[in-house]
Image 1: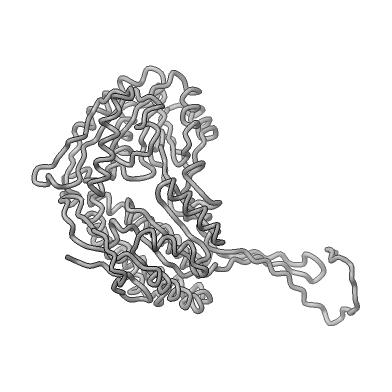
Image 2: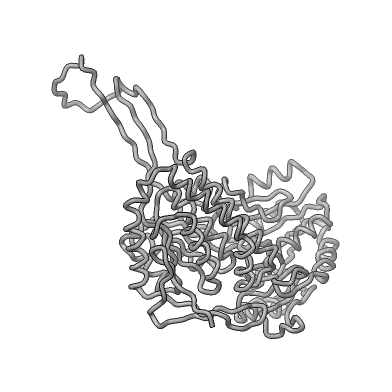
Length: 498
């Protein structure tokens, strides 16, 4: 069985804590690797390596940083299939989906390559007689990232490329469920010429997380994961003086108005609810059907759902792969089996689904629940699996009130041909990312990603301009170079512009 390593100081480091976690192939259910869980001392070693590297990397020229990032982008492009295969083997998503994940992560690397433009300062001359004021941005120091299982390559790339482009050094704690992609990203960064210690990867569990949050040399922490953990990360990080951005969970609603193209809306609901087996925080998990659209829309979604090809992610014919673990598969199934008792109509039941030849894999079929009460667990909870709830609303106003009453505000979408309704929706809906006839409105790399309410904890969204702001600190410099003709003298009055 393959043993994973940490990546510290530009080289692989074997775990010494004696604590190990299993890494499964979700398509077969077999354990194929084991990952070491870092001790406090091992986390400290990674932080020490990053701190030492910051002394030179933090003052490295922008030209040096961008040259490394351009080379890194080139290597990622050359190895994208390999990285996607690692994702499929440990996460289970189909290969095309894994390739898309790598591509979206590379968008942020490309953004990081433009860091000379992104961190340009400002200069005001002659604000007072022979006085100039400049505003600049400087790196924070050692920063950390804690990332989830559902995007083991993309989410780390949302963080460390911008952080190191800004001159910081980085310690990454990836998910212990699928650690290989992040480790390979670090290897390729070293191959691109990133100095030893600038990017470190420590495998682990809560011990590693807590040490990163407590460590006095960590200045900032980025996190993506569930809402309860995001709250914990924020509170514990702030307690120890960290800057924190923590992205939490979601319950994303897709509003379908009576004038919408229902075939198009049904196609997009399928893509957004069941893509990546629903294991993404931007998945559409609730369709709100307005007026008399509900019955026809549900029929169209059900027809498409029943024809989906579910199988191993390595099979090019598969449209959806397994879930990440057996326990998560069973938890997702419990929401479907309990939905009818709580008042929902189970239109498509994906529980009990198996793939011939892969009976031990963590597969589940897609499920469609109609007329779901807002009091049902399937509506209230983030299921994080291929379960789509449909709720009915008589009017637009009723629908927008329903969406805005959700404790989450990550992403949302409206499907309509009415420009006025779409404009009203994008202004009135309480969510951080809005799609108009776009079901999963994940921003491109130069716009920031993040939600509202219980979907975000901290002041900054991730990547884009917010990412630059998060990974840098501002400094304002006021200078005066007196003219030789100036007279001296003492003046105890408060300085004023003149």
